[in-house]
Image 1: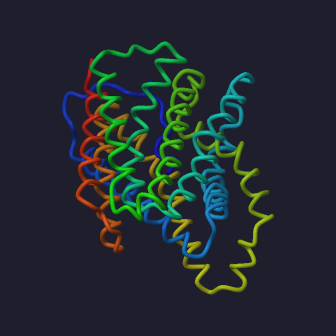
Image 2 (image 1 turned 45 degrees about the vertical axis):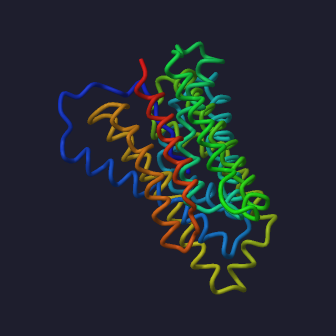
Image 3 (image 1 turned 60 degrees about the vertical axis):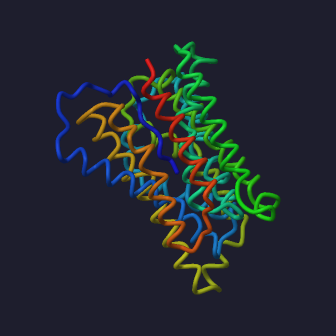
Length: 304
């Protein structure tokens, strides 16, 4: 899910929304909403830590040309923030999402990912003195309530054995919120694509080094189905990280960040549709929790 790595400073108002912007927005929702089912498919062969390491390694390689081209873009003092953004915005969440989906339905993971917007606001208010209004506080509380409903819904057996894995997704969204604030406040002046590629360059070698300690490469040599699973992970890394990022930046240039953030509301719907199509059980209260979360996110983004 590297969904999420663009600088708000690129936003500019648009008097009208061109048709191409709606096409790109739909494409983003499909790309990012599909990422959760791709994780699930990759986990059919690879362990969660193997999947996380493969994902970051491939994503780094996909954006490597941009990273090499932009090595001189950051100021010396910005490299530590690039490393921190790479760790909490890419590397650690890749492992957390994969581990969560060993027990949690991919559709529910997609809905919980919407909490990123709430935690971005909270962290910005606490550490970067961003303005937070009463309505936004209300939106945060609504989002937390929706999270509780979503995590603790379902049958008693599901709640006891699987639902707590949703907390790993929640932790990942907290990290995403921190990374987005670092990008906004500490990495000004670096183009978003260069920023993302350099952040991946700082952590990609760590992921590859860890990957070499796992039996992932052995699985490719001994298990024919491992290549299909690798294909899913490759789609996840290339589309969700590289192509998704390019489209998102293009969308912000064409319209504004408010319009682009609409993908936050569409992505969980795509994730749930994929999950149901793959045979996942979604209970009524799961839909209630989803509606509450999206309501909270919408209130936070709309509140002045």
